[in-house]
Length: 76
Image 1 (spheres, rainbow, N blue to C red):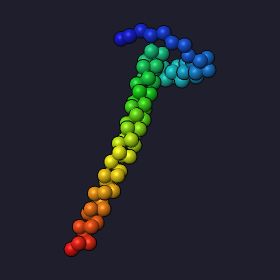
Image 2 (image 1 turned 90 degrees about the vertical axis):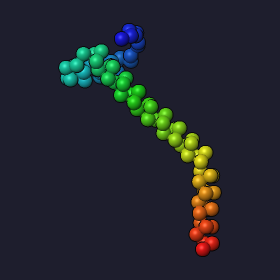
Image 3 (image 1 turned 180 degrees about the horizontal axis):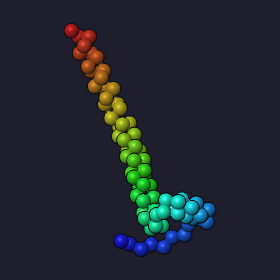
Image 4 (image 1 turned 60 degrees about the vertical axis):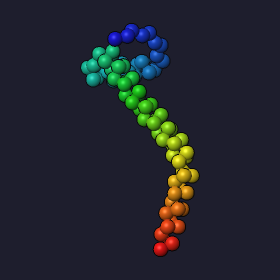
């Protein structure tokens, strides 16, 4: 494990303390789980952004291929 030092806004700290005390969970465990959850959330957002960019890149090709298929259907 790595040790870090961080500054947390007073309001966020107080809210965190209230919640984790009700959960009867150590502060370290609570913060680790919160960061893991946030990392997962951010990975999904990054993947969504990447998929949108890649989707735009293939859109023109997809439309061209669709047009080709439509022409094949009408040729018969």
